[in-house]
Image (tube, rainbow, N blue to C red; front, top):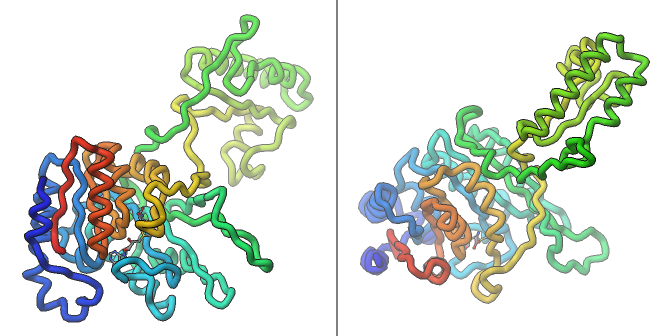
Length: 389
Ligand SMILES: C[S@@+](CC[C@H](N)C(=O)[O-])C[C@H]1O[C@@H](n2cnc3c(N)ncnc32)[C@H](O)[C@@H]1O
């Protein structure tokens, strides 16, 4: 176990040192840099935890070295973590400024193919919901050039009890998915698809998972007053061919849109929609379901399970929250970063999915807790603690 590394490298770079840091940084940077380089080039998948202020620690890491970042920074003005840090600023503008500084470093260390998943909660000030997630997201796009691919709504389903009489309960938080480049970022959609339900054969006829057998479509084609005779013949033939594809598993399910029978699913304008044009020219078109299954949506129902117990940490996020981001955007064997690692949830999930991970936290006791959690979970494994204390 390389815990001795953690004990030996005794430099603490905390937020309180930030002002006097520049002079020290060059010499102090090496333990972080060395630990990271050894870790990234090695075969050890046990997480690496680095203790210190996220902005300063990230400043010591090499550019283009991280595959994916998943994190949840502190709320503003809500919680007092063990070693202070971000979230305790006098005003929320300074809080947003400080987050932006960390995320500029995240962008630098992230590979061009990398992704940044940011779960961020909001705060009220004098009854006014501050819109902090939106403020941060817009500044990331406008000032740092991040490209926003999705805003996921994490529906906590239960949420905290709320006895106020003048507003609704708050049960969701956003998760933003940012990338550095619009095309060519790593994205493995097939590994998060919901498994398709299988087709059945009922009375000798193929029936898709959602009950489509073609009987109703055939009747609609027959009775259609809008299709010409040749369009009807083509529609019957195409429907038979589609049912064969369902039977063979090439298509898992489908819908048939027939002229005059259903509304087009997109725009009715032929100028805007290729489907509207197809409907006009052929009299029908198909919506095919991917045989590998449906993509998850941007609404995630995940209970805020407390895997660590509130006594040790105020805000661990659920492991399920990290699974989809890591599977989607970090290749096997790649490195996941969490610059506000807390109890190490991101690291636990990364390890269980066969990815390396680097967790940074300003609190050495949270880092210890995260290390113990990893050891307990993966009891045969060692975990590496590098950098400074
Ligand atoms: C919301 S918690 C993260 C919880 C984490 N996702 C988990 O599942 O345990 C935010 C963490 O950020 C840490 N933190 C606050 N300011 C920091 C800073 N400047 N640099 C690094 N970590 C910081 C806190 O100590 C806290 O553990």
